[in-house]
Length: 219
Image (cartoon, rainbow, N blue to C red; front, side):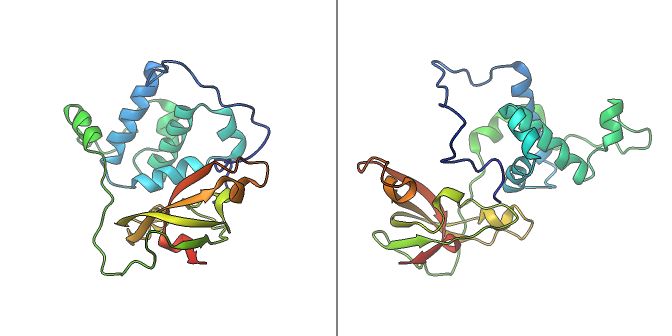
C-alpha cells in the first residue's frame, strides 16, 4: 500500500530527533496500549500483519497528527469494531451495551510478559525450492498493491544482491489481507545507496532489506 506510512526517502520531514537515554515508554498510557494490543490479539480475530495494515490504513491527515502509540490505539479500536469485539456506541458511552456478552479475557495479565518474551515465530516449512541463492543479482518488482506490502516504495524496481537466505516465513503481504500464511522464501537483499537514492548518496553506503520471493525477479 502506498500509504502515508511509507515515507522512506521522502523530503520535507526534517531531521529524525535522536533522544539520548530514550525510555521504552514516554507516558504510562503507552504501556497500557501495548498490553491492550497483546490482550485483544489473544482473541485471534486478526494477526500481527493485519494489525500493521490497520495502522497503515489510517487516514493520512490523522496518521501524521498522531504519536506512535496514538496510531496503535486508533488502529486497535478499528480492528475491535471491525471484528465485533465492541461497537462505536460502547466506545462513546464508555461501558458495554446491556445485551453484550461477557467473555473471559483471552490472555491473563500474568501471561503477558511470557508472551512478549517468546514473540511470534514466523518460520514455516515449505516444499518449494528457493529461486535465489546468496550472491544472486535480483531486481525488485514494481508493484503498487492496494493492500499491505513489505516492499517499500523507495526500493521498487531496484537492483540488489542476495546476501542471506532465511528459509520460508509467513508471507506478510498475504497474511495481512486474510489470505492465509502462504509461506515464501525470505531473503536479505543489499542495495547500494546510489541505486536507491541516486548519485548524491555516498558510494560507500548500502541498505539491507528483508524481502520475500514474490517481491523479486532475477536480473
